[in-house]
Structure formats: C-alpha cells, structure tokens
Length: 299
Image (cartoon, rainbow, N blue to C red; front, side, top):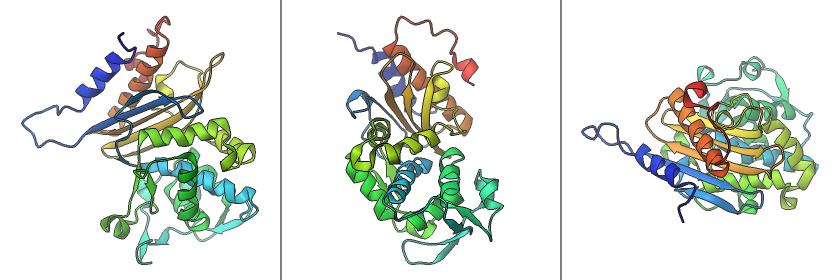
C-alpha cells in the first residue's frame, strides 16, 4: 500500500541533490520526525542523521533551568549579572559574543547590570537570545542539560557541549548536535508533561514560553492558520531547524521536527521547512482543501 508520505519522501530526496552538479558538492541532509506525545514515530525521513544544533539546544537548556528551579536550587527571580564575555568550556579562555549576530537588544542593553533568571530563560526561547543562552549555561550547567537528554532517551548523536560562539571549544571538536528524532523526543516529553523531568510544574511553563516564540516562519507557518503551536527554531547559514508541539483543535496533539543542513539562505530555508510541515499536514489530512496554504503565501 502506498504511504501517504511517498510524495514527501521523493521531494526530500530531490532536495539534497546539488542544484549545479558541476559545482563542488556541499553535504546536504534533510531530516523529519513526526510522532505522538509518547514519542512514537508516525513518519521519519533520515531522522537519525546528526546536524549542528544551532539554537535548538536552547530547548533542553531551559528545561534544565526549570528543573533546578523546581528542586529549589535556583530562583527565577534571582538576579544574574549580564556580560557579553564568557569562559570557554575547553580551557577557561575568554571569548566575546557578537552583539550584531544576536536578536535580543533587551538583554544586551543590560550589560553591566542584571536580569533575572526567568527573564533570561524567556529571551533565550522567545527571541532565541545568544547572550541569555550563555548566561543560562553558566548558571544551569551543561551536566544538567545532559541529564534532560538522557531522561528523554536521546541518542548519543545529540549533545550540548558548549555555549554559543565558543570557538576554542568548537575547534577542539566540542560542539552542539541534534537529530530530528531526538528533538522530537524532547518536545514530546514537554507535551506529555514527562514526570521524570518534573511534570506539570516544570513543563507547563516551558510549553507556555515556547508558545510565545516570535520566530514562527518555519513549521508553524506551514500549518493551517490558527493552529496552536509551541516551538523552538534555530538557524545559521546553511542550517535551519524547527521542532514544534502542535495542538490542533479537535485532534490529538503531535510533534514535528525538521532539521535541514542545506545550501539555502535564511528566507529560502524557512519557506522550505514550512513547506515540509505543510506536506506532512496534507499527508495526514488528505481530504482537506489545502489550497489556501500555498508556498507563495508562506513566502
């Protein structure tokens, strides 16, 4: 029997073929994972392939922060000194973030002052703030992030080994990587309020924060207008990812994770990921009229 995702499989296979076969080939990988809140897969396409994590590493980081808050080890209202310089996880050498590469003027304006832990978590998720993320890494600890990944059953391919722009560590091979399948497992755990992560007390505020994310031009943009989502995206040149917890009205919630390492600019990549989400929805809702959700409108 023909799979409802056969056309999508063919499209994704074509997407990784170089546009110009005579040019130097660039490694390209497109990964998709679709599943329920128990972490059971309904569709996968190269979902175990590793990708550079970009800002998707902020999802398990913020979960780890809220776990420590609920355990009484951290306080969301506690002030955190704001600085744009950090110590490398490799050797303690100092590196500086590039403010022009960040999207969080609010936290950068506080350099030399303080922001609360709760404000940093909010900015890391909703505005994908790099400075807030590195401040959280220092307060929360990478071991706590690793424990979140372990609890939800992530593969060894998913690792959060350093903060943002820690070039010394990166050159030594310490990096942040994810798979679409593992991102799906983390988000599914949020959606089902996984008790081992702290249940409602930890994960309800995390989902509420994810639902406030301002960067919704990838997976959410490919779904029918008004569909409730809580998502975390990430992008750098040549890499664009998104993982979304989707709660359609009158249907069971689900998670879709899309990871792309492909030679597209930021706008093209967002349209491409939104198109994948649209095709996934259409495959599962073949009787719906999807004519309103065209690529031209998403662009």
